[in-house]
Length: 495
Image: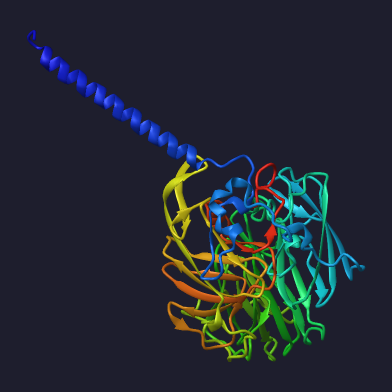
């Protein structure tokens, strides 16, 4: 062998091996990138994997992973989401038209943001016609906290197609449960809700509201400026000694701490459900999760002074006209613990006799979603779209353990159902039944909740810090025998 040839051969071998290794890395990276890509359109029934929570695994969902992006085939006797509607056979008690428009960087409903306050009576058949005048991405209306039939839930690509500009869609549902709720778009929701496409729905009890002032205060941040009902503050004219019910709605993505100076308050309701025997509270804040609602009750002082309710950079002041505003008060150190607040009352079902038990473990890690690298939220160790499909049957008692080991708090919102909080970090609830549809799960916290699966359909179970949902923190609760004809993509982008 000529001098130096052995050295050149070794060098060439190293170059070949290096080139082959680089090709292998590129091929592997390409396969990972390709496998993360989402199809242009897909059924949510084809996403992820089915979990049965110890209940029976039906053949349709048992083969879930093999159905591809179209989801499982329909079986004889199955129902489409579009069949699960509100009443169609009688006139509406309340009929409203809401016209959605885009006005520069904001969205409006009937020319305003927030949209009109809808106030109806318990038991009313409500009919809302949504008209899209000029929202280019399309629009829907989701009735947040109202346990409507599935077809009326307003989730683009799951329960309906988004309403394109120039189109309309009619929602019909019975307002069965009195309470404070809100409505908002569930099409490109992280942008449209932030931009102002929302409003408040109040369902008044059949017996009417108590004497005194009954006031809505919807908190929303526009371009970094906090507002209440779209203004920089709210003044409630109330006579000395007059009772006030203040319905607080958090339409932002962040949790709020709410506190009151000038009078003790009672937490009358949470997420539209009355608190049993609420106690007066002084020197303690109330937590208002993103998407959540809290009704506070207080009486204005008989001496003619005012009550100030701090809402995080904006306030509600209640008192006689002309009375001076009290100064901004410092936040109290204590927070009302709804796990212990109020007195126990019957639930109407036995969580210990659960038919299904699920885990919803929230984490975060680096990965690729639809070919885009980034830090994404995980559910039970998996990233979107490999998220759980929690399968239940009509009538099941369901328990769910929500564990947050992520880097942020998560206001978890289950559509179509209310759940009772059983425990936090292993400590059992001992107060009034704490019934929620929007539960703020803090960092390193674990909650156990329970509910009855009594509203068939396909329901989102997602974080209502809406950018978190965009980054993959969304799962679904699906009833056996229910399918959706709608598809995400092709104009439907729910988050």
